Image 1 (cartoon, one colour):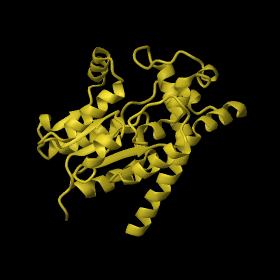
Image 2 (cartoon, helix red, strand yellow):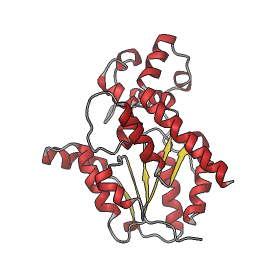
Image 3 (cartoon, rainbow, N blue to C red):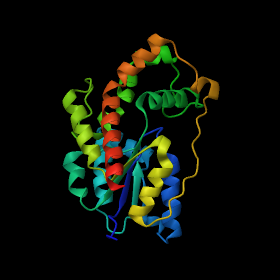
Length: 253
C-alpha cells in the first residue's frame, strides 16, 4: 500500500453532510493517536474578523489560511468552508489529499434555505419566504456554489456563472482525490478508510430545524422551475463529476 497523502483536506460544502464527516474523521484520527494540534478546523468567525479588520473579502482570507495550514508540518487533517483556488492550492494537490462531498443541487439549495429560515436567528438566518428569497442575489449565489467554490479563479464576482466557470469547476473537482455524494456517504467513508488506513465511521449530526413536512413539501411548478434554473450551473458540475466518479468506480471494480 502506498503511503497516504497528508494532510487530508476536507472542503466542507454547507448542507452536504460535512458535519458528520468531520466528526468521523476527527474520531478516527484521535483513535489512531493524532494530537489535537494536528487537527485543524476553520475558525469561521476569526477569518471574518480578520477580513473586516484588513478590509479584505472573507474568502480571500480563507484562501491564505488554507494554503498556510496545508503547508504546516505535522498537520494531519484540515476541514472547513473553504474554496479551491488554483494559484494557492494547486501546488498542494500532489501531496495533500483533497476530498469533498456533493449533494444534488436543487435538494441542497432547498435544504440550506430551510435550515437558515427556521434556525433561531444568528449568522446566516434567512427571514424571507422562499418566494421572495429566490429573487435576491444571495439566492443565485447559493445556487451556484459548486461553481463558485471550485472554479479556482480566486475571484468571487457577482455575475452569473459562465460556461468557462462551469468547465473549470468540473476539471478541478475531477482532480480531487475523492468526491462523494451525500446519499452514498457510507461508500465514501469506505473509500476514505481504504485510502487513509483509518476506520471512518459516520455519525448523524446537524439535523435541520425545519419541520419534516416543510422540507419534503411539493412546491408549485413555477417556483420549482425557477429554483432549477438558478441551480443549473451547479447541476452541470454535479452531473459531470458524479458521472466521472461512477466511471472511476466501475473501472476500479
